[in-house]
Image (cartoon, rainbow, N blue to C red):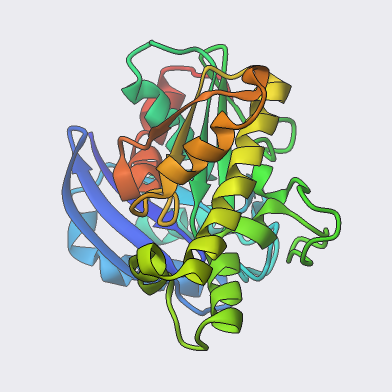
Amino acid sequence: MNVLAIDIGGTKVALGLLQAGVLTERKQIPTPAVTTADAFADEILQACRPWLVQADCIGVSTTGVVTEAGITAINPVTLAFPAPFPLQAALQSQTQLPVSMLNDAQAAAWYEYQRLDGKYRNMAYLTVSTGIGGGLVIDGKLHTGAQNFAGHIGHTVIDRFGPLCGCGQTGCAEATASGTAIQTLARKLISSSIRNPELFDMAPEHAQAEAIIQNSAQAVATLCANLKATLDLEVIVLGGGIGLAAGYLERVKQHLAAKPPFFQVELVAAQGDHDACLLGAACLHTRLASGASQ
């Protein structure tokens, strides 16, 4: 089966063609700034039009909560879609191909779980990127919850006196530790034009840059400890542009190691690297065909 995979993030859309499970084509474009699902779908499809003749189906992973009605962004600052955004229907209408859609971190969780070769039954995928998202596999089954909201751990409060989050709460992990939060603080304290890659590059020789990154890593370690206390997970897989940045996983591990033993959990890097969500999108049809739990 050939799958056109689409991964929609707050700043970019990754596109890939997988043939017999192998990623043979890949590109990415800035997230389109359009207000209708039809226009959004058209812009995405224009970017990968030559691949459509080879595709048997389309798999989509996206930031936000996915329901039959469409996509709803929890934090409109990260993904400014009118809600609900009926992208699945628009893609099906324009391509006449079957389309499966799931939250990006949930899709990545299912992909990463399969890479663990049955070693664990209870795991989470945690992405630290533009925002912070998560996906859960419990007793070997992807857990999405009654409203497909399960895993949105980035919107759990870790500091009730912290910054206001775009979701409407105060002190969410996403408002404290995400790539957006890191860059906002760095531009306030260091330079108005600094970007996160520069911040990580200068951290070894710049105490303030290191402190900003450590603040994020400590918040993510708290998230991991909370997940362990709530679900008694065996492993947490860390991904995303910040999660996979040089030295970040090691920083999170150090902060988690300072927690009491019951709150510690094994942490590993995503095997799908920066494409875990894209590869997760590609395996949605296989998951549904196998009858895996929603």
